[in-house]
Image (cartoon, rainbow, N blue to C red):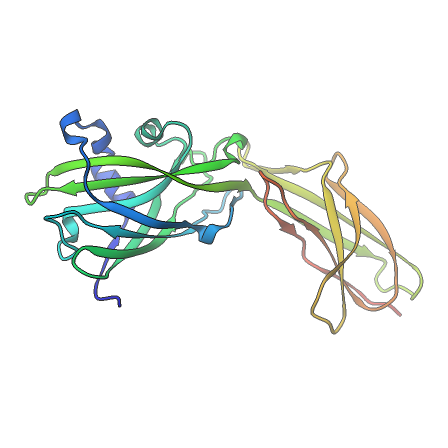
Length: 275
């Protein structure tokens, strides 16, 4: 039962405190005793990022507090997961290859336990350095930031912990479709063209994605299901082209199913009237 809650804006915390725990004297870098468990990033799905739009994948996790700390005093502790690449301390110190929550809310379960839900904050804008290279399209590691504060508000101790959990980041892809002629005589040929592009995180533009196998799908008018009718490979400019025989009214679309570095792309459907 949700008996209480505490909302935290992580960006505000980092702005006010910096990552002081990482630069604190060694005596302060002790075990906090906080346990963070059951971390789920983006419901277990890959995170897909384009060239300009902020992406906020959901996160959830549980917190268990050490002796002397209670959920009734939420200002005395802080704990949250984040994504990083390379060395955990280097990533957190520099802010590069480091993605943290924008905010999260913790719901009190009892005096020692809370359930937290929120969102990561990924901004592809060059100033943020979240995804500024295409090499960032890979599997990221999950770490946890843990902090305890004294009663007077001073930092008592803090630490970073690694986790075996990972989260893949992928470059967004886009597809277009054009089927013609419209309308068309039954039994005649329909030419379906299109283009496949994907996000270039270095230039913040969408580039042609060549040499990719893309499925042409069709949904007959009055039905709910698209079915693959043909496959085609993109040209050096990302172009797609194939032909089908007109039989019934319906909708055509191109679907690219993605790969380890690139997300799925589904074009808008183009309707063809068969007469």
